[in-house]
Image 1 (cartoon, rainbow, N blue to C red):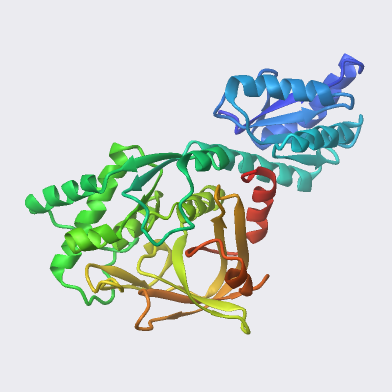
Image 2 (tube, rainbow, N blue to C red; image 1 turned 120 degrees about the vertical axis):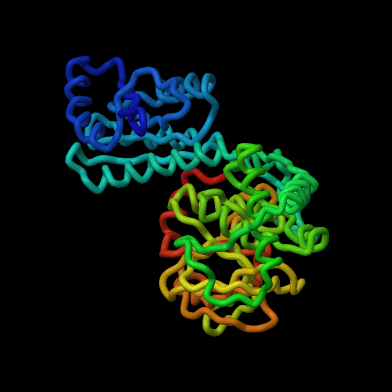
Length: 414
C-alpha cells in the first residue's frame, strides 16, 4: 500500500554511521504503522514529506535539503520530526526558527521515544494538516458569474488568493448555466428534490413547476462541475432569480452533500472557508448570514435559504426569502455543538472562529428560511461588530476550533 507520507532522515556526518542506523531503526516500526516510509529522495509531489532530524548539527544540512526538494517540487510548509536524544530537538527548533524568519510556515513534532503514543498522535495530525495544505493548493474553484455586488469585502484577487491559499479560480459565464437550464427545459426533463436519504420534504409551499426548475438548476450545476473538473463552486445565484425566475438553493445543497463545496453569491471567502473545513474534517458546512447578535447572551441568529440536507433532519421547501420565487430550504437542525468561522482580509490571511452550541432552530418570517441560534463558548460575538471580516459565517457540526487553529498557526496563509 502506498505510504501516506515520506520520512526523510537527516543526520550529521560527525556521528557514527552504525549508531545512526540503529537509532533510525528504533523508530521505523512505529512510523511505518502510521503510514510512513523512510525515503532518501522525496521526489513524489503527491505525498507529504516529514524531515526526521536524527542528530544535532544538521541545521544547514536540513535547510539545503529542503531548498533542493522545493526547487524540484515547489515550496510549502515544513514538517520537522525530532526525538529526545542526539541534540535532535535543538536542531529542529533552530531550523524552524530560521524558516520562520524567512516568512515560512511549519511545525516541529517531538517524540520522547518510539513508544510515545501521544507524540505519534500529534504526528498523525500534523501529516494530515500537511495533506490538507496540499489539497487546498490543488483545488479548482468554479466562479459562476461575478460575485454579488454587495460582497465588497469577500472577493480577493484571484492571484492573491492563489498565492495565499493555493486554489485555482476557473471563471464560468452565467450564460453557460442558463444554456444548460434552457436546453433541459426544452427537452422536458423533470427535476427531482429529495433529501440525503431519498425522503421527500415534509412540507412544501412551492408548486411543481418551481420544484422542476430547481431540479434543472441542480442538473446544470452538476454538469458544469464535471465539464470544468471542479472541486468547489460559487455562483452569482441572484442572476438565476432575475433571469430565470428560479433559485440555486437546492442545487448548492445537493452539491455540498455530493462532496463538492458549493457557496452562494459568488462569495470566495466563504467558499475557501467551506473547502478548508471539508479538507480538515471531511464534513459539509453551512454558509449563513448573521441575522442578529445578542451581546449580553453572547449568541447570534444565523439564517440562509440553503443548507446541506445531510446536516439537518426535517427539511421543508419554501420560496426564496428575498424574491418569493423558486425553492428555498427550511432545515431543522438538532441542538448540539458547532463551530463557527470566517476567513477574511485582502488575501484571506485573517480568521475568526469559535466553538459554540446550537440551542434552537426557528422559523421567523422576514428572514432566510433555515434559521438557528448559536451561543458561543469562547470569545465574544461583539468582535463581529467591532472587527468584522465580512458578511457570511460558516458553521460545521462539532467543536473543532482548537484543531482548526492548530492548522492555521502552522500551515495557514502567511
